[in-house]
Amino acid sequence: MTFERPRRRVERVFLHCSASDDVSLSGDKLVETVRHWHWARGFSNVGYHFLIDKQGAVLPGRGLEKTPAAQKGRNTGTVAICVHGLEDFSQAALDACRNLCAEINEVYDGRVTFHGHCEVSPKTCPVFDYKGLLNLDRFGRMP
Image 1 (cartoon, rainbow, N blue to C red):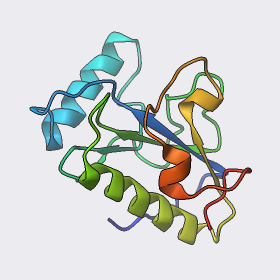
Image 2 (spheres, helix red, strand yellow):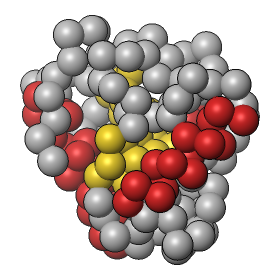
Image 3 (tube, helix red, strand yellow):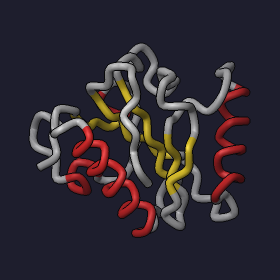
Image 4 (spheres, rainbow, N blue to C red):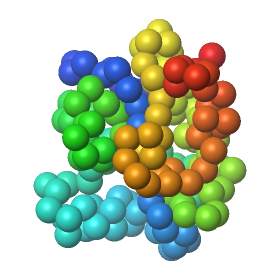
């Protein structure tokens, strides 16, 4: 994956989980399923910029030039990433998440911060230890 910096301002990256452990959802099928979930909620398309399946494939969702529909009231200036899982997150998916976040961090010279959806909403999303995975400091910055 090569992250290409969008023209719009980005200051924060938000991590999400799909809240599903359905192993049949991978690749394009995962993207289409999430698209239908989001259509049912009234969104125009997938709300996340990237989805990561259990095999560790990083899949495109909403175009990076578009504001995500992922953190109600907190979408401006963000990139949204969704890792497929609820209780079972594969090592391949977590490694892909870490690598994508490291790439984004590098493109922005360490000036973006990383957050879980749970930081701006009364949810447990993502339910994996994103702070430990990314080795975040208390401000949400990667090393």
